[in-house]
Length: 465
Image (cartoon, rainbow, N blue to C red; front, side):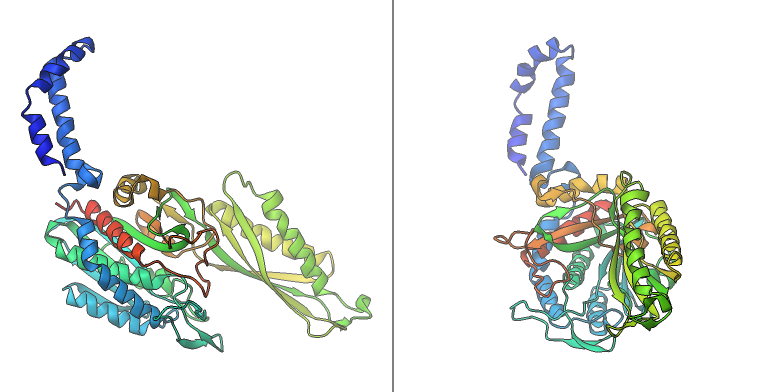
Protein backbone atom coordinates (compact mmCIF):
# COMPACT_ATOMS: atom_id res chain seq x y z
CA UNK A 1 0.00 0.00 0.00
CA UNK A 2 1.55 3.34 -1.09
CA UNK A 3 -0.08 5.67 1.41
CA UNK A 4 2.91 8.04 1.64
CA UNK A 5 3.09 8.73 -2.09
CA UNK A 6 -0.67 9.26 -2.23
CA UNK A 7 -0.60 11.77 0.62
CA UNK A 8 2.11 13.68 -1.20
CA UNK A 9 0.03 13.67 -4.36
CA UNK A 10 -2.97 14.98 -2.49
CA UNK A 11 -0.93 17.85 -1.06
CA UNK A 12 0.51 18.90 -4.42
CA UNK A 13 -1.57 21.82 -5.69
CA UNK A 14 0.11 21.64 -9.09
CA UNK A 15 -2.05 18.59 -9.88
CA UNK A 16 -5.16 20.72 -10.45
CA UNK A 17 -3.24 23.35 -12.40
CA UNK A 18 -1.60 20.87 -14.73
CA UNK A 19 -4.95 19.25 -15.43
CA UNK A 20 -6.81 22.46 -16.20
CA UNK A 21 -5.88 22.97 -19.90
CA UNK A 22 -6.80 19.42 -20.90
CA UNK A 23 -9.99 19.57 -18.87
CA UNK A 24 -11.19 22.65 -20.72
CA UNK A 25 -10.49 21.03 -24.07
CA UNK A 26 -12.64 18.10 -22.96
CA UNK A 27 -15.46 20.37 -21.88
CA UNK A 28 -15.09 19.45 -18.20
CA UNK A 29 -14.51 21.99 -15.44
CA UNK A 30 -11.07 21.85 -13.79
CA UNK A 31 -12.60 21.45 -10.34
CA UNK A 32 -14.69 18.43 -11.38
CA UNK A 33 -11.78 16.76 -13.13
CA UNK A 34 -9.50 17.44 -10.18
CA UNK A 35 -11.97 15.79 -7.81
CA UNK A 36 -12.28 12.84 -10.19
CA UNK A 37 -8.53 12.41 -10.42
CA UNK A 38 -8.08 12.67 -6.67
CA UNK A 39 -10.78 10.06 -6.17
CA UNK A 40 -9.02 7.79 -8.64
CA UNK A 41 -5.73 8.21 -6.78
CA UNK A 42 -7.38 7.30 -3.49
CA UNK A 43 -8.95 4.24 -5.10
CA UNK A 44 -5.61 3.16 -6.55
CA UNK A 45 -3.94 3.59 -3.19
CA UNK A 46 -6.51 1.33 -1.59
CA UNK A 47 -6.05 -1.31 -4.26
CA UNK A 48 -2.36 -1.83 -3.58
CA UNK A 49 -1.05 -5.34 -4.12
CA UNK A 50 -4.43 -6.88 -3.34
CA UNK A 51 -5.89 -5.84 -6.66
CA UNK A 52 -9.10 -4.14 -5.50
CA UNK A 53 -10.28 -1.40 -3.17
CA UNK A 54 -12.97 -3.76 -1.94
CA UNK A 55 -10.33 -5.96 -0.28
CA UNK A 56 -8.36 -3.19 1.41
CA UNK A 57 -10.50 -3.22 4.54
CA UNK A 58 -10.67 -7.01 4.70
CA UNK A 59 -8.59 -9.13 7.04
CA UNK A 60 -5.41 -10.16 5.22
CA UNK A 61 -6.22 -13.56 3.68
CA UNK A 62 -2.62 -14.10 2.56
CA UNK A 63 -1.33 -13.56 6.08
CA UNK A 64 -4.02 -15.82 7.51
CA UNK A 65 -3.16 -18.57 5.01
CA UNK A 66 0.55 -18.31 5.78
CA UNK A 67 -0.24 -18.66 9.47
CA UNK A 68 -1.88 -22.06 9.02
CA UNK A 69 0.20 -23.37 6.11
CA UNK A 70 2.31 -25.82 8.10
CA UNK A 71 -0.72 -27.07 10.02
CA UNK A 72 -2.53 -27.70 6.74
CA UNK A 73 0.44 -29.65 5.36
CA UNK A 74 0.71 -31.70 8.56
CA UNK A 75 -3.02 -32.47 8.55
CA UNK A 76 -2.85 -33.43 4.91
CA UNK A 77 0.07 -35.81 5.43
CA UNK A 78 -1.63 -37.50 8.36
CA UNK A 79 -4.86 -37.94 6.40
CA UNK A 80 -2.93 -39.13 3.36
CA UNK A 81 -1.22 -41.81 5.42
CA UNK A 82 -4.55 -42.98 6.86
CA UNK A 83 -7.06 -42.91 3.97
CA UNK A 84 -10.56 -44.32 4.35
CA UNK A 85 -13.05 -45.51 1.75
CA UNK A 86 -16.51 -44.02 1.16
CA UNK A 87 -18.86 -44.15 4.17
CA UNK A 88 -15.96 -45.48 6.26
CA UNK A 89 -14.27 -42.14 7.05
CA UNK A 90 -14.41 -42.75 10.82
CA UNK A 91 -10.91 -41.61 11.80
CA UNK A 92 -11.06 -38.66 9.42
CA UNK A 93 -14.36 -37.42 10.83
CA UNK A 94 -13.02 -37.66 14.41
CA UNK A 95 -10.04 -35.47 13.51
CA UNK A 96 -12.34 -32.91 11.90
CA UNK A 97 -14.79 -32.97 14.80
CA UNK A 98 -12.01 -32.40 17.34
CA UNK A 99 -10.61 -29.48 15.36
CA UNK A 100 -13.95 -27.75 14.81
CA UNK A 101 -14.88 -28.10 18.48
CA UNK A 102 -11.50 -26.67 19.48
CA UNK A 103 -12.41 -23.61 17.42
CA UNK A 104 -15.66 -23.18 19.34
CA UNK A 105 -17.97 -24.02 16.45
CA UNK A 106 -21.37 -25.65 16.66
CA UNK A 107 -20.66 -29.18 15.41
CA UNK A 108 -22.98 -31.86 14.06
CA UNK A 109 -21.69 -35.38 13.41
CA UNK A 110 -23.10 -38.58 11.98
CA UNK A 111 -24.96 -36.98 9.09
CA UNK A 112 -24.86 -39.28 6.04
CA UNK A 113 -22.94 -41.83 8.16
CA UNK A 114 -19.66 -40.00 8.79
CA UNK A 115 -20.32 -36.41 7.71
CA UNK A 116 -19.31 -33.51 9.93
CA UNK A 117 -20.81 -30.02 9.81
CA UNK A 118 -19.55 -26.96 11.66
CA UNK A 119 -21.36 -23.64 12.01
CA UNK A 120 -19.49 -20.38 12.58
CA UNK A 121 -21.54 -17.39 13.70
CA UNK A 122 -20.20 -14.11 12.40
CA UNK A 123 -20.01 -10.96 14.47
CA UNK A 124 -22.70 -9.20 12.44
CA UNK A 125 -25.97 -10.32 10.85
CA UNK A 126 -25.89 -11.41 7.24
CA UNK A 127 -26.23 -14.36 4.86
CA UNK A 128 -25.16 -17.95 5.39
CA UNK A 129 -22.51 -19.37 3.08
CA UNK A 130 -21.48 -23.02 2.90
CA UNK A 131 -18.05 -24.41 2.03
CA UNK A 132 -17.69 -28.10 1.27
CA UNK A 133 -14.80 -30.57 1.34
CA UNK A 134 -15.07 -34.28 0.56
CA UNK A 135 -13.32 -36.84 2.77
CA UNK A 136 -13.20 -40.25 1.08
CA UNK A 137 -10.32 -42.09 -0.55
CA UNK A 138 -10.20 -44.63 -3.38
CA UNK A 139 -9.47 -48.36 -3.74
CA UNK A 140 -6.04 -47.64 -5.26
CA UNK A 141 -2.60 -48.89 -4.18
CA UNK A 142 -0.21 -45.94 -3.94
CA UNK A 143 3.12 -45.99 -5.79
CA UNK A 144 4.29 -42.45 -4.89
CA UNK A 145 7.59 -42.51 -3.00
CA UNK A 146 6.94 -40.14 -0.10
CA UNK A 147 7.47 -40.75 3.65
CA UNK A 148 3.73 -40.43 4.28
CA UNK A 149 2.61 -42.75 1.48
CA UNK A 150 -0.44 -44.85 2.22
CA UNK A 151 0.02 -48.49 3.09
CA UNK A 152 -3.62 -48.88 4.09
CA UNK A 153 -5.81 -51.71 2.86
CA UNK A 154 -9.51 -52.45 3.12
CA UNK A 155 -12.17 -54.71 1.67
CA UNK A 156 -13.88 -53.46 -1.48
CA UNK A 157 -16.46 -55.57 -3.33
CA UNK A 158 -15.21 -58.67 -1.60
CA UNK A 159 -11.53 -58.10 -2.38
CA UNK A 160 -8.66 -56.77 -0.30
CA UNK A 161 -7.45 -53.57 -1.95
CA UNK A 162 -5.01 -50.80 -1.31
CA UNK A 163 -6.53 -47.48 -0.24
CA UNK A 164 -5.16 -44.10 -1.34
CA UNK A 165 -6.17 -40.46 -1.48
CA UNK A 166 -5.69 -40.61 -5.24
CA UNK A 167 -8.10 -37.74 -5.88
CA UNK A 168 -6.76 -35.27 -3.32
CA UNK A 169 -9.62 -35.32 -0.85
CA UNK A 170 -7.03 -35.30 1.95
CA UNK A 171 -5.98 -31.86 0.72
CA UNK A 172 -9.58 -30.68 0.57
CA UNK A 173 -10.17 -31.62 4.22
CA UNK A 174 -6.89 -30.09 5.38
CA UNK A 175 -7.46 -26.85 3.48
CA UNK A 176 -11.01 -26.44 4.80
CA UNK A 177 -9.79 -27.07 8.35
CA UNK A 178 -7.33 -24.23 7.74
CA UNK A 179 -10.03 -21.98 6.28
CA UNK A 180 -12.22 -22.64 9.33
CA UNK A 181 -9.38 -21.67 11.66
CA UNK A 182 -8.76 -18.50 9.65
CA UNK A 183 -12.39 -17.39 9.67
CA UNK A 184 -12.74 -18.04 13.41
CA UNK A 185 -9.82 -15.66 13.99
CA UNK A 186 -11.71 -12.86 12.21
CA UNK A 187 -15.29 -13.87 13.03
CA UNK A 188 -16.14 -10.47 14.51
CA UNK A 189 -15.59 -8.93 11.07
CA UNK A 190 -17.95 -11.34 9.31
CA UNK A 191 -21.39 -10.05 8.32
CA UNK A 192 -22.99 -13.48 8.24
CA UNK A 193 -22.38 -17.13 9.09
CA UNK A 194 -20.43 -20.03 7.61
CA UNK A 195 -21.38 -23.70 7.30
CA UNK A 196 -18.37 -25.99 6.91
CA UNK A 197 -19.43 -29.24 5.24
CA UNK A 198 -17.10 -32.24 5.49
CA UNK A 199 -18.79 -34.77 3.25
CA UNK A 200 -18.31 -38.53 2.95
CA UNK A 201 -18.64 -40.70 -0.14
CA UNK A 202 -18.18 -38.26 -3.00
CA UNK A 203 -16.65 -41.13 -4.95
CA UNK A 204 -19.86 -43.09 -4.54
CA UNK A 205 -21.37 -45.07 -1.70
CA UNK A 206 -20.60 -48.79 -1.37
CA UNK A 207 -22.97 -51.17 -3.11
CA UNK A 208 -26.31 -51.28 -1.33
CA UNK A 209 -25.72 -48.05 0.61
CA UNK A 210 -26.63 -44.41 0.20
CA UNK A 211 -24.13 -41.65 0.73
CA UNK A 212 -22.57 -38.38 -0.29
CA UNK A 213 -24.11 -34.98 -0.87
CA UNK A 214 -27.51 -36.37 -1.82
CA UNK A 215 -27.84 -38.24 1.48
CA UNK A 216 -26.62 -35.26 3.51
CA UNK A 217 -29.38 -33.17 1.95
CA UNK A 218 -31.93 -35.94 2.42
CA UNK A 219 -31.02 -36.07 6.10
CA UNK A 220 -31.66 -32.35 6.55
CA UNK A 221 -28.35 -30.60 5.94
CA UNK A 222 -30.11 -27.46 4.69
CA UNK A 223 -33.41 -28.04 6.51
CA UNK A 224 -32.95 -25.44 9.25
CA UNK A 225 -31.39 -22.80 7.06
CA UNK A 226 -30.48 -22.98 3.40
CA UNK A 227 -27.19 -21.29 2.48
CA UNK A 228 -27.36 -18.21 0.29
CA UNK A 229 -24.24 -19.39 -1.52
CA UNK A 230 -22.22 -22.61 -1.56
CA UNK A 231 -18.57 -23.03 -2.52
CA UNK A 232 -16.31 -25.97 -3.30
CA UNK A 233 -12.79 -26.54 -4.57
CA UNK A 234 -10.99 -29.52 -6.09
CA UNK A 235 -7.30 -30.13 -6.72
CA UNK A 236 -6.27 -31.32 -10.17
CA UNK A 237 -3.09 -32.55 -11.83
CA UNK A 238 -4.20 -31.02 -15.13
CA UNK A 239 -2.99 -27.53 -14.14
CA UNK A 240 0.35 -26.27 -12.77
CA UNK A 241 0.71 -25.76 -9.06
CA UNK A 242 -1.06 -22.66 -7.79
CA UNK A 243 -3.19 -22.06 -10.88
CA UNK A 244 -6.93 -21.67 -10.34
CA UNK A 245 -9.59 -22.57 -12.88
CA UNK A 246 -13.24 -21.55 -12.68
CA UNK A 247 -15.95 -21.78 -15.32
CA UNK A 248 -19.31 -20.01 -15.45
CA UNK A 249 -22.42 -22.09 -16.14
CA UNK A 250 -22.17 -25.83 -16.82
CA UNK A 251 -18.73 -26.96 -15.68
CA UNK A 252 -18.79 -30.70 -15.00
CA UNK A 253 -20.93 -33.38 -16.59
CA UNK A 254 -23.86 -35.28 -15.21
CA UNK A 255 -23.20 -38.96 -14.68
CA UNK A 256 -25.59 -41.87 -15.11
CA UNK A 257 -24.63 -45.51 -15.38
CA UNK A 258 -26.63 -48.19 -17.14
CA UNK A 259 -26.97 -51.94 -17.31
CA UNK A 260 -28.38 -53.68 -20.40
CA UNK A 261 -29.25 -57.35 -20.09
CA UNK A 262 -29.48 -59.09 -23.45
CA UNK A 263 -31.39 -62.36 -23.29
CA UNK A 264 -31.00 -65.01 -26.01
CA UNK A 265 -31.25 -68.80 -26.03
CA UNK A 266 -28.23 -70.90 -25.23
CA UNK A 267 -26.98 -73.42 -27.77
CA UNK A 268 -23.85 -75.17 -29.01
CA UNK A 269 -21.41 -72.89 -30.78
CA UNK A 270 -21.40 -75.20 -33.80
CA UNK A 271 -25.18 -74.90 -34.26
CA UNK A 272 -26.05 -71.18 -33.74
CA UNK A 273 -29.29 -71.58 -35.72
CA UNK A 274 -30.69 -73.68 -32.89
CA UNK A 275 -30.50 -70.76 -30.46
CA UNK A 276 -30.51 -66.97 -30.23
CA UNK A 277 -27.07 -65.42 -29.91
CA UNK A 278 -27.04 -62.63 -27.27
CA UNK A 279 -23.40 -61.85 -28.07
CA UNK A 280 -24.21 -60.81 -31.62
CA UNK A 281 -27.24 -58.88 -30.33
CA UNK A 282 -25.05 -57.15 -27.75
CA UNK A 283 -22.55 -56.23 -30.46
CA UNK A 284 -25.37 -54.75 -32.54
CA UNK A 285 -26.54 -52.73 -29.54
CA UNK A 286 -23.05 -51.39 -28.88
CA UNK A 287 -22.67 -50.33 -32.52
CA UNK A 288 -26.12 -48.75 -32.80
CA UNK A 289 -25.78 -46.84 -29.52
CA UNK A 290 -22.84 -44.95 -31.04
CA UNK A 291 -25.32 -43.14 -33.30
CA UNK A 292 -26.95 -41.42 -30.32
CA UNK A 293 -24.13 -38.91 -29.99
CA UNK A 294 -22.89 -38.97 -33.59
CA UNK A 295 -26.27 -38.71 -35.33
CA UNK A 296 -29.21 -38.11 -33.00
CA UNK A 297 -28.53 -35.43 -30.37
CA UNK A 298 -27.63 -31.83 -31.18
CA UNK A 299 -24.03 -31.62 -30.00
CA UNK A 300 -23.88 -27.94 -30.96
CA UNK A 301 -25.88 -27.29 -27.79
CA UNK A 302 -23.70 -29.36 -25.49
CA UNK A 303 -21.34 -32.32 -25.80
CA UNK A 304 -22.27 -35.81 -24.64
CA UNK A 305 -20.57 -39.16 -24.14
CA UNK A 306 -22.02 -42.67 -24.05
CA UNK A 307 -19.41 -45.32 -23.23
CA UNK A 308 -19.54 -49.04 -22.58
CA UNK A 309 -17.26 -50.18 -19.79
CA UNK A 310 -17.83 -53.93 -19.71
CA UNK A 311 -19.32 -56.79 -21.70
CA UNK A 312 -19.97 -59.88 -19.58
CA UNK A 313 -21.21 -63.18 -20.95
CA UNK A 314 -20.23 -66.70 -21.81
CA UNK A 315 -17.75 -69.16 -20.31
CA UNK A 316 -16.60 -71.43 -23.16
CA UNK A 317 -15.53 -71.09 -26.76
CA UNK A 318 -18.13 -73.57 -28.00
CA UNK A 319 -21.17 -72.44 -26.01
CA UNK A 320 -23.34 -69.54 -27.13
CA UNK A 321 -24.55 -68.18 -23.78
CA UNK A 322 -28.05 -67.49 -22.66
CA UNK A 323 -27.37 -63.90 -21.59
CA UNK A 324 -24.93 -61.03 -22.00
CA UNK A 325 -24.69 -58.02 -19.71
CA UNK A 326 -23.48 -54.60 -20.87
CA UNK A 327 -22.59 -51.79 -18.48
CA UNK A 328 -21.66 -48.23 -19.29
CA UNK A 329 -21.92 -44.54 -18.52
CA UNK A 330 -23.68 -41.47 -19.90
CA UNK A 331 -22.17 -37.98 -19.55
CA UNK A 332 -23.96 -34.78 -20.57
CA UNK A 333 -24.02 -31.06 -19.77
CA UNK A 334 -27.70 -30.43 -20.49
CA UNK A 335 -30.64 -31.81 -18.51
CA UNK A 336 -33.08 -32.24 -21.46
CA UNK A 337 -30.33 -33.97 -23.45
CA UNK A 338 -29.61 -36.19 -20.45
CA UNK A 339 -33.24 -37.33 -20.32
CA UNK A 340 -33.40 -37.78 -24.11
CA UNK A 341 -30.30 -39.99 -24.25
CA UNK A 342 -31.72 -42.30 -21.58
CA UNK A 343 -34.87 -42.84 -23.64
CA UNK A 344 -32.94 -43.40 -26.87
CA UNK A 345 -30.55 -45.84 -25.20
CA UNK A 346 -33.38 -48.07 -23.98
CA UNK A 347 -35.18 -47.94 -27.34
CA UNK A 348 -32.08 -48.80 -29.35
CA UNK A 349 -31.23 -51.69 -27.05
CA UNK A 350 -34.73 -53.14 -27.23
CA UNK A 351 -35.17 -52.81 -31.00
CA UNK A 352 -31.63 -53.93 -31.88
CA UNK A 353 -32.08 -57.10 -29.87
CA UNK A 354 -35.55 -57.71 -31.26
CA UNK A 355 -34.32 -57.79 -34.87
CA UNK A 356 -32.16 -60.78 -33.93
CA UNK A 357 -34.78 -62.58 -31.89
CA UNK A 358 -33.32 -61.56 -28.54
CA UNK A 359 -34.67 -59.28 -25.83
CA UNK A 360 -32.94 -56.42 -24.03
CA UNK A 361 -33.88 -54.70 -20.80
CA UNK A 362 -32.18 -51.47 -19.80
CA UNK A 363 -31.77 -50.20 -16.26
CA UNK A 364 -30.56 -46.65 -15.73
CA UNK A 365 -28.83 -45.84 -12.45
CA UNK A 366 -29.21 -42.09 -11.97
CA UNK A 367 -26.03 -40.48 -10.76
CA UNK A 368 -24.86 -36.91 -10.26
CA UNK A 369 -26.44 -33.90 -11.99
CA UNK A 370 -24.47 -31.38 -14.03
CA UNK A 371 -22.30 -29.06 -11.93
CA UNK A 372 -23.60 -25.62 -12.87
CA UNK A 373 -21.70 -22.63 -11.54
CA UNK A 374 -23.95 -19.64 -10.96
CA UNK A 375 -22.88 -17.02 -13.55
CA UNK A 376 -23.48 -14.02 -11.29
CA UNK A 377 -21.58 -15.62 -8.43
CA UNK A 378 -18.64 -16.53 -10.65
CA UNK A 379 -18.56 -13.01 -12.11
CA UNK A 380 -18.42 -11.52 -8.62
CA UNK A 381 -15.74 -13.91 -7.36
CA UNK A 382 -13.46 -14.07 -10.40
CA UNK A 383 -11.70 -10.81 -9.40
CA UNK A 384 -11.30 -12.21 -5.88
CA UNK A 385 -9.51 -15.28 -7.21
CA UNK A 386 -7.42 -13.13 -9.56
CA UNK A 387 -6.32 -11.01 -6.61
CA UNK A 388 -4.86 -14.17 -5.05
CA UNK A 389 -3.06 -15.76 -8.02
CA UNK A 390 -2.89 -13.00 -10.63
CA UNK A 391 -4.63 -12.80 -14.00
CA UNK A 392 -2.22 -15.16 -15.75
CA UNK A 393 -2.78 -17.90 -13.18
CA UNK A 394 -6.58 -17.69 -13.32
CA UNK A 395 -8.11 -19.55 -16.25
CA UNK A 396 -11.49 -20.66 -17.52
CA UNK A 397 -11.10 -24.39 -18.17
CA UNK A 398 -13.02 -26.28 -20.79
CA UNK A 399 -15.97 -28.50 -19.97
CA UNK A 400 -14.99 -31.44 -17.77
CA UNK A 401 -16.65 -34.77 -18.47
CA UNK A 402 -15.92 -35.96 -14.94
CA UNK A 403 -18.79 -35.73 -12.45
CA UNK A 404 -19.06 -34.31 -8.93
CA UNK A 405 -21.84 -34.53 -6.37
CA UNK A 406 -21.25 -30.90 -5.41
CA UNK A 407 -23.91 -30.50 -8.09
CA UNK A 408 -26.61 -31.45 -5.57
CA UNK A 409 -25.71 -28.46 -3.37
CA UNK A 410 -25.66 -26.15 -6.40
CA UNK A 411 -29.22 -27.23 -7.22
CA UNK A 412 -30.28 -25.92 -3.81
CA UNK A 413 -28.29 -22.67 -3.62
CA UNK A 414 -26.20 -20.57 -6.03
CA UNK A 415 -22.88 -22.39 -6.22
CA UNK A 416 -19.31 -21.98 -7.39
CA UNK A 417 -16.92 -24.90 -7.79
CA UNK A 418 -13.35 -24.16 -8.82
CA UNK A 419 -10.12 -26.06 -9.42
CA UNK A 420 -6.64 -25.72 -7.92
CA UNK A 421 -3.62 -26.95 -9.86
CA UNK A 422 -1.19 -29.14 -7.89
CA UNK A 423 1.33 -30.33 -10.50
CA UNK A 424 4.82 -29.16 -9.46
CA UNK A 425 7.17 -27.08 -11.57
CA UNK A 426 9.17 -29.18 -13.97
CA UNK A 427 6.29 -31.58 -14.60
CA UNK A 428 4.05 -31.12 -17.63
CA UNK A 429 0.38 -31.17 -16.52
CA UNK A 430 -0.42 -32.85 -19.85
CA UNK A 431 1.63 -35.89 -18.86
CA UNK A 432 1.35 -35.74 -15.06
CA UNK A 433 -0.31 -38.69 -13.33
CA UNK A 434 -4.01 -37.89 -13.30
CA UNK A 435 -6.45 -37.87 -10.43
CA UNK A 436 -7.36 -41.49 -9.54
CA UNK A 437 -3.91 -42.70 -10.61
CA UNK A 438 -1.72 -44.62 -8.10
CA UNK A 439 1.00 -42.09 -9.00
CA UNK A 440 -1.15 -38.99 -8.33
CA UNK A 441 1.11 -36.39 -6.69
CA UNK A 442 0.32 -33.11 -4.95
CA UNK A 443 2.72 -30.17 -4.77
CA UNK A 444 2.00 -29.04 -1.22
CA UNK A 445 2.98 -25.43 -1.93
CA UNK A 446 -0.38 -25.14 -3.69
CA UNK A 447 -2.28 -25.74 -0.45
CA UNK A 448 -1.52 -22.26 0.87
CA UNK A 449 -2.94 -20.84 -2.36
CA UNK A 450 -6.12 -22.86 -1.92
CA UNK A 451 -6.54 -21.77 1.69
CA UNK A 452 -5.98 -18.12 0.79
CA UNK A 453 -8.39 -18.29 -2.15
CA UNK A 454 -11.23 -19.89 -0.19
CA UNK A 455 -10.63 -17.65 2.82
CA UNK A 456 -10.80 -14.57 0.60
CA UNK A 457 -13.93 -15.84 -1.15
CA UNK A 458 -15.61 -16.24 2.24
CA UNK A 459 -14.45 -12.83 3.47
CA UNK A 460 -15.80 -11.20 0.32
CA UNK A 461 -19.10 -13.07 0.45
CA UNK A 462 -19.63 -11.96 4.05
CA UNK A 463 -18.35 -8.40 3.50
CA UNK A 464 -15.72 -8.75 6.20
CA UNK A 465 -14.28 -5.43 7.41
